[in-house]
Each structure stands twice: as C-alpha cells, then as structure tokens.
Length: 500
Image 1 (tube, rainbow, N blue to C red):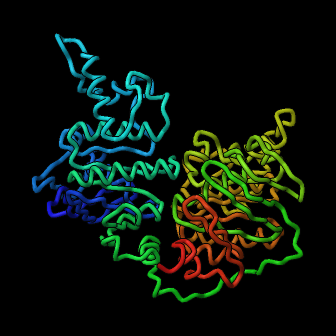
Image 2 (image 1 turned 90 degrees about the vertical axis):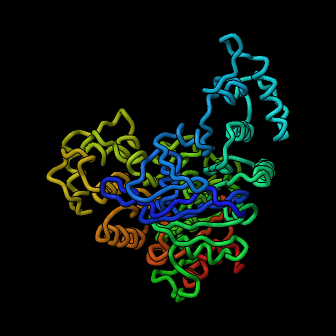
Image 3 (image 1 turned 60 degrees about the vertical axis):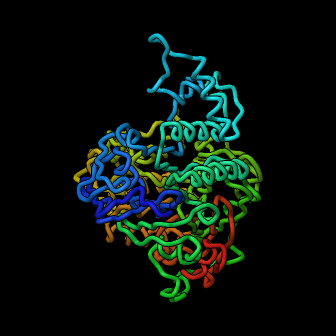
C-alpha cells in the first residue's frame, strides 16, 4: 500500500439548510481495502457522490495518483478509473449478462455489434471470478449475488483503479459474502484500491485494512483496522468514547412482571432478520438498540406487518395471529411512525386534517366515512395536544417544519388509540425543543398504559425513554437489557460483541 491512489483534501458540501460535509479528508492507497463508516447522516454517501461526480464539492481538492481531477458526472469518474457498485445493482436486468458488461462500449465488426466476441470475452472475464454462467441469458434470471459479481466484473474490465462497494453485502447470504470477499482480496492483490461501505462490523474486521469514520458530516479519524477495537469503533461512530462513559442507569420506571403482555414474538424471522424473541408489556418503552443496518427498523416493520413474518410466531393479547398486511396491524391496535417521514410518512399535498385522519379512516373502513366536521374536530384536538404550529387544519403538511410534520404523524397514529406505538427515529432532524417534547410524550403515553417501541441512534435519548432494550447486531438479536442494566457502557459492549 505504498502508492496513494485517491487523496481528497478539505472536502466540503452544502445543501439547502444542511452542511453535509465539513473539511473532510480521505486517502486511499493501491492494494488497500478501506472501510468508510458512520451512522445515518454521517456524510458517507455524500463523500462518495463527490468522488464519483454525482455531486460537486463546494470546497476542497481531489487527486488521482497525484493529479487533480474534477469529475462532473459518474461517466467522467468511470473514464478516470473510478467505478461504483451499489447495494441496488445499477445494471439493466432486461439485457443479457454480456450486454450489461459491455453496455456503452460495445465491440463492433463492420459497424455492427460483434456478439461472438462479446460472449467470448464476457465468459473469459467472469471465469476470473469463478462464475460459470450463460452470458447470453438475461441478467434478471440470476441472483442478486451474481448480479453484483457481474457489476464488479464490468468495473474491472473498464480498467478501474478504484472500486467503491456501497453496501454490497446487505442482500447476500453468508456464503455469498465469503465469495465476494475472495474477489475483493484478488482485486486488492492486483493493486486496486477498494472503498467498502457497510454497517456490518464483523465484515469490516474480516476484510478491511483501514477504517475512516465520519460523524455528522465531519471527519473523526482514519485507523488501521487491526489497531482499533470494536468498542472503540462503536464509540467513534456514535460520538462517545468508552472511557468517557459514566455508566448512569436509565431514569425511568422499571419493568413490572405482573403487567399485561400486549405483543410477543417467538423466534420470529423476516427480511433477513432471524430468531427475534421479545414481549411487550402495557406501560413500557422497549428500545431497539444497534448501529444503522443492525436490523432495528426491519424488526419494527415486521411488528407492523410491513414486512411479512417468514418464521416463528406472533401473539397479540396472548393469542397467535397472522397478519398479512399493515391494515391487519392497524386493526389490531398497532401504530407505526416510520424512519423516513418524508417518503413513508407525510402526504405532502394533503392538509394537516387529511394527514391526521388517514390511519383512523383506514381502521374504520371505507363504509364508515369520517365526516369533515369530525375530521376537523380530531385535527384540532391533536393540534392543541401536541402544540402543532399551524395557522389551521387546512394548511398543507409540506409547508410545516420538520418537527411539526413529525407531530402530525404522531397525531395520525394517536387518533387510532393504539395499544402499541412503534416510533422509528421520531426525533431525527428536528429541533431540540420539539425533540424534548416528543421524549416527554413517549414517557407520558407509557404512564397511561400504552406499550411503545422506541428506536433512536442517540444513546442518551434511549436512556431517557426506555426501561428495556433489545440489542441488534448484523440483523440478529444479540442481547436484552432491563432497567438499571441499561447504561451507555452496556449498550456499546453489546453492540460491539463484548470488549474487544
């Protein structure tokens, strides 16, 4: 790893109202697998977009083998030898494997595509990756793992010097991940520099040489993988060094064994999640702890039937149930505020009133229409209860601040009078005052007997709100903490897999 391939210096990027990157450096050597890590909003994706020409930096310089470059499009970056393989394979599934490998740079003979050479060269190229497949068949006929291998093969064939793998393993089995790692090691031995973005800590330590951590758009540091323990890595990602943790217990009510169980999962699996077992009682707040990509949101979606249960059992009120769709969950008293309120929560072109009554109307059914007067009364009630700042119920929700949009989504679900409320990152991207209001509301709802699931990337917030926590890592349940056991140190140790 003597030669520096990529050197990014003082990279800054602003979006309206957001500073996505602030004076960030990044260096990649030849023959290096370099993990780029950070929680949601850390700046990883923006840094990659700047490097690959998707976004243009506001400040800073990029050097490729010592020469300044300024890619304005992904094609320009690719022409320079910088290729990216995304989590969602960015190829054409309706075209053949060979067409995907040579798309945009077809081999021709007498002005026509030379299919014979294309097929022959595609087969030879894929043999390097131990892939023996029919290159004349449509890409869509093959698994995601094979499609990713084809995407990597294409990147290698265009003489890539730098390969960026953005969450390439999220849809792969353990065996497929090991096959990918073999390919990565082979490319590393050839001198290629690889930037590896993942949320799986085991994979970071299994394949990478170096780690760069970003947090809130700022550079935390670059470290040799072998010299950085997992507990140190987790601390740098979340902004709390292990030595700084005071171990204070949760300041919330303890779980009581005689409370009614609202919902229970027994060895449940769904969408990559395996073997989750938990029970939720009336009046408790259960936190799902773990890094981004650990399986927190997937478990929440499973509880709401947004992702189907593929194994195990779900019981509500002590009785086994099978929910086929989210409407089944709503009618059984389950409510869900999703992580991404803009794409999965609000309906921007509808009013506050219309947004608030959506779930209640779905619960009642189309034959029991909510009148304008009743809808307006419900909306006014929750505008007052949650202190939503708006000139009236007819205001379009897209015109509200992020914090007030979040309150409207909360109002939508509270209007259904749920027995279980699932909150996935309910305070992300909102101001400190509104964040405190929502935290107080969570505790108040629990005091009133409601069961809640609470997901947050901020450990301090989890400590304030939760009296029990299920810890997730690599899409598996790895521990449970109750009452005074819930400390920052205990959470970090569980996430990291013990002190290492």
